[in-house]
Length: 110
Image 1 (tube, rainbow, N blue to C red):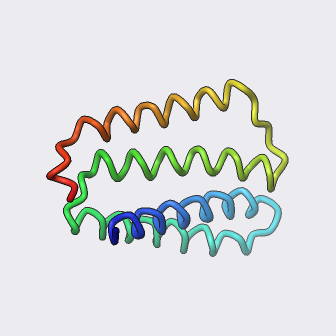
Image 2: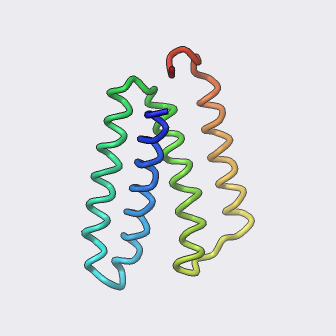
């Protein structure tokens, strides 16, 4: 359960940093949140690896969740487009992560 909490924190930090990077285009002070968010996300990812989580699974879930959440929140916060093709792309990324996840031995992740 602890690994999942750390992974969720890494995802939230990365998505916040990416959204702050977009916001920094208009207000430069958002760049500080960008730096802090990315640094925190990488610290969390390193903690997961120290706990023995497989890098392929951790990075895959982190990246896929980041892509999906950033695309959705970019639409909500910045009125960026969300087309059916973007939705298909997100689904493909998630499907790829599921394939990577199911390829690992369950005992390694416990």
